[in-house]
Length: 56
Image (cartoon, rainbow, N blue to C red; front, side, top):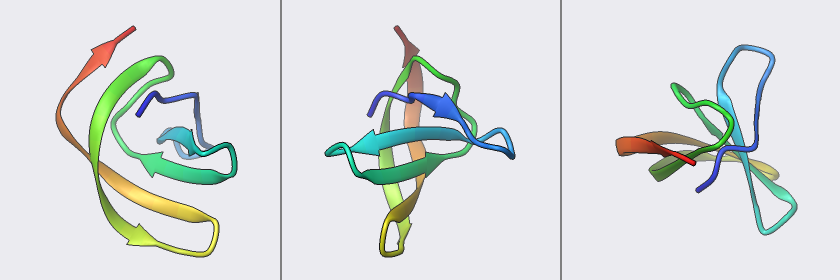
């Protein structure tokens, strides 16, 4: 995933298929990172980075 922006608490936020939001702690805008989804709600998923983020 590519992290698009930061959330209010400093977590990276990516959009999946233009509508689904994935929150990834420890990432910054522009980072490309593989993630493991840990929790899913109706319109938001929470994930952990897997491996090291690549900076674009």
